[in-house]
Length: 111
Image (cartoon, rainbow, N blue to C red; front, side, top):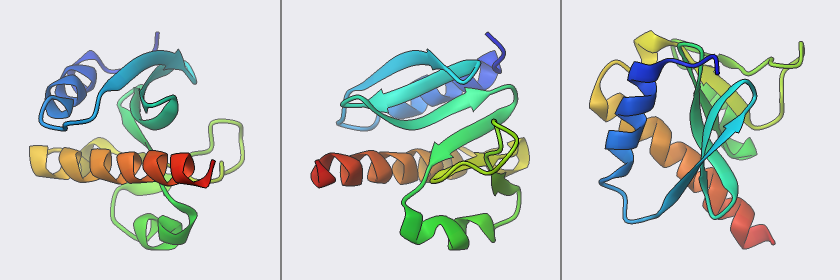
C-alpha cells in the first residue's frame, strides 16, 4: 500500500475520541476509514483524502493546502486532498475527520 504510516497512526488515534465506529478498508491505493460503509477520510501517500459535502466543496477548496482529489486525472466529486501542512496539528486533523464524518452521515440520511 502506498500511504503514510505516521498519518495512518494519527488517524487511528484521533478516531478513538469519536463515539462512532469506523472500519478500515484498502482503497485508491491507500487506506480509507469508513463509517457505516461510507468513506470519510484516509491517507493516500502523504496526503489526507477527505469526503466533503457538495455544498461545502467551494469553501473547503479555498483553504490553504487543500486541492481537488484528481486520482483519476480529473477532479472527483466530493473528494479533496489535504497536504501535510493542512493537518499538522491534532486540531486540524480532527476538523478533517469531522468533515468526512459529516459527509458519511449525510449520505446515510439520503438513503
